[in-house]
Length: 363
Image 1 (cartoon, rainbow, N blue to C red):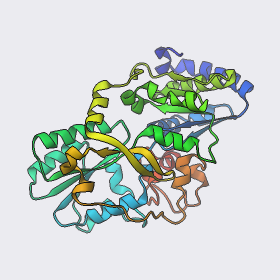
Image 2 (image 1 turned 90 degrees about the vertical axis):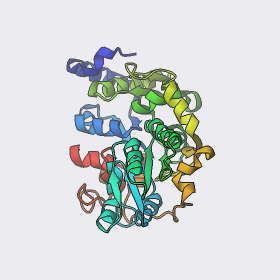
Image 3 (image 1 turned 135 degrees about the vertical axis):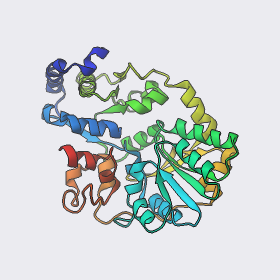
Image 4 (image 1 turned 120 degrees about the vertical axis):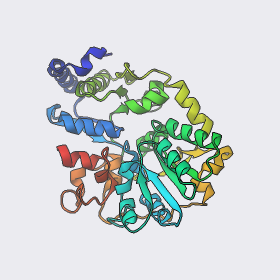
């Protein structure tokens, strides 16, 4: 395993590249996938793809929580934002995500009179509810295991303080079931995974042991510096060259084998796994987080009997294929023609972690 001194030392980059090239002379063409939106942006920003050997391909997978949220869920939220006496609180990216109609977003609905506010954390939304008891404040709980503990803590705080005009619409996702679904899909063609460092900080590096044990695929938990990523790619190509898939933790300065026990305890106290729908992957058992029945008073889905409409996608948008790694952003017929950051058709162009947004800015 690489020592942590690699992670910020630019002079080590040529050494890493030379070793990667040596490995790929043994492996032949290699296709690797990152499943973290922050990795996607870091790879694009640093130009890593342009310096790798020609026979190494990097693909972006379902690592952007805004991107994997289906259009039907956004449509339901847009309608909810128009209800009198309701205020929708969300992270900033989600305000710009269109539903099944181009340009129809929470920002547009706010201009039409809907009450919507951007917040930095769920606690901000709880404070808004406390200051405005005349409003039903709904926080859109989106993200993977990384944001689940903070959302859980906020629900517990709302319950302890009996703030009854606050609730959470849980759109939280679990990473492992989605990766399994991706691997088991008929068009899967990936040789190894860059595992998400932020998620692993919560669930632990051991949370990705299923890759080598169940699928004979190598995985490396990676940090976010360019040399972190190159070091992780080196580890993956080395395992492939030796035909010895395993799980390695390159991000040891933050990630422990068992993760963060306090965060995991918080998640388990408030949430239970449930089926969830993913853009590009469909319905996946156990891939979502549902609020436990004992906290139903703060579960917006139950409190207001919410149900997404039938799934619809924007005509021409290929976000679903980009999310699965079967199509690069440039392969979408709308990319750089109709779809841009100023006029996004799909969520992959909206989010700061989206593959299309990263390709537009840096590639």
